[in-house]
Image (tube, rainbow, N blue to C red; front, side):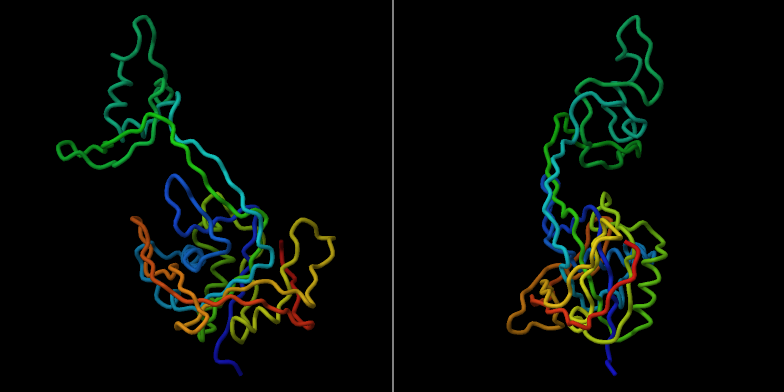
Length: 290
């Protein structure tokens, strides 16, 4: 009997985005789910606070099989600029905007609009460096950008990944599986604009990451219940499997979560190897909601 167990997860949806090095102007996506992103997904399902220690959740070994790698998709964004309604929260975050919205700024002979409906031409931007004023305690921004910022955000479209979490404690994996199907917080595939579709937690099985990938069929297509099943015999998708220690052929990846926090998470290195997985002819199929 195996000393380890594996929780199999299905991560699929119209869009996914698993950032590694993205900043505001360019939000990248990795070619596959990251360990940090998946552990964050599990932590949200369990209802952990951001500053709460991850404990055993960070100790699981991680693997991902790219059943459908998806298509990279670039989304063009502009932030700020132009004429926008002045919202109540804007009055709290920027005293200059609040002053502009007083009756003194309304042209003579006109009435100010309803609260929250006043417009300021070419003023609205994204407030930066918001902090409490030392004298009044009011939230003010140290800098306001009044011109539109151009950003680009990358996604994976129509991708489906079989993710595996390995741990000797089966009860821990079953608790994670139950939480993913009955989450205490909203779940998304890397970014809030990317909700998952269908079942997430599929099964807890004995064995190792590689054994689980080799003995389970490709995930079915989600666009039609009547479409023929994906071929399994001879299929050789790529899989990335974590190694508990650096070995020949392993490469470092900086997505091992140490802690999450409102000011950004802390990560360390882990090691993984890439494999072509030959799915066995007797591989188990799926009976899942797509």
